[in-house]
Structure formats: C-alpha cells, structure tokens
Length: 107
Length: 114
Image 1: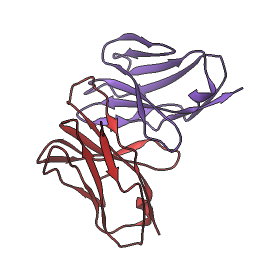
Image 2: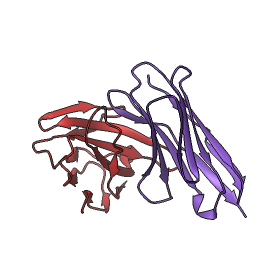
Image 3: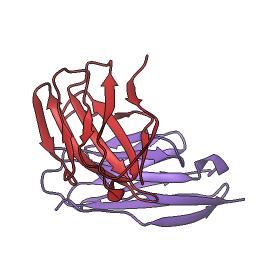
Image 4: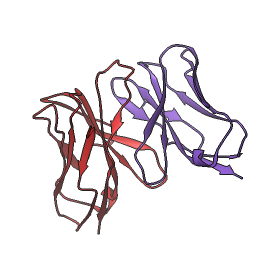
C-alpha cells in the first residue's frame, strides 16, 4: 500500500514554532502537498514539494527528502488561527492523503 | 469564479436508499477526485478520473459508482446506502497528473445514513 504517516495530534504555544512530520513510501512518488483544514471546512492548499529542500512561504515552510521518504511542515510565529488539521498528501498515479495532524494552539 | 461546486451540502438518507452526489468544476481540469472524510480522520480516495470517459478506483470504492461523461461533471452514486457511508464527501479537481497545481476542493456534502 501507499501508507502516509503523520502524528495524530500536536500541541504548541502561541508565538512558538512547530514542525509536523510526514513519511511516505517512495516508490512512484511524483510530488507532495501540504493542506490546512479547519474544522467543518474543505482543505486549503499550503505548499508543494517535488525536489529536495526547503520551500518557504511566509510563516510556513515545507521540506522534502525524496531518498528518505520524509517531509515536514514548519509553522513559525504560531497564531491562534493556526489551530487546524494539517494534511500531507502524496501524488503517486493518484493523490493519497495521510490521516492529518490536529494542531492545538495554547495561548 | 465558481471553482468546484458540490450539491447538496447536507442530506439524510434511510438505509437502502440511493442518491447521487453532484460535483461540477468550471476550470477545465482533467483530473477529478472523490474523497470521504470520517470524523477526526484524513481523506480517503473513493474514485478518481483523469479525463472524460475514464474513471478508476481509489482506496475505498465499494458501495459507490462514478461516471465522467463530460470534463465538467463527476457525479458519485450510492446505490444502497448503508450506515457505514455516513461521512463528509469532498470532490476535488486539478489540472494535470504531474503538475504542481494543487487540488481545488468543493465545500463538501455532509451525508447521514439512518
């Protein structure tokens, strides 16, 4: 199968930095997406990685290591509105999602 | 820009009833997907399509059917609704198989089977 693994839940403090990891099976890999999903809403696109390295977009960055089958999403200067689920999705011949990581932000 | 439109937004069905969840996109995207999301879980792929006339099974296709007669529309059919199909259903589209373009999601259909 094409298992995609993420931690189920994480907690961090407002203003801090948090890293959400994602591991996946490397065979057939064609790219990796990170999405944010607030409760009761549709996922929204955050980032895309297909080459090794770090992609930075404001407070959010995403890293990929294709040889290790590993990615992480880094959120800086956390705000209360960042409380959401973060979904890692990998493009094989189709796009498969991980179960998501619920991020709780404490004041 | 409408993007991806799903109807209905909410529906309650009785066990054994059938219904079609509608999905339409106006972005001329070739790839379309149906996912279900159970409470507190990620998205599971039901069916997907790489273009009009072409469909393929995802991770959890049992109990569902799809068709893709046009580029714009990708309806999902439940023939004999079961309580296990209670879920939120998301339709998504994207422009190409190896593109860096992300999926665009509809707002979802919340379906309860009682």
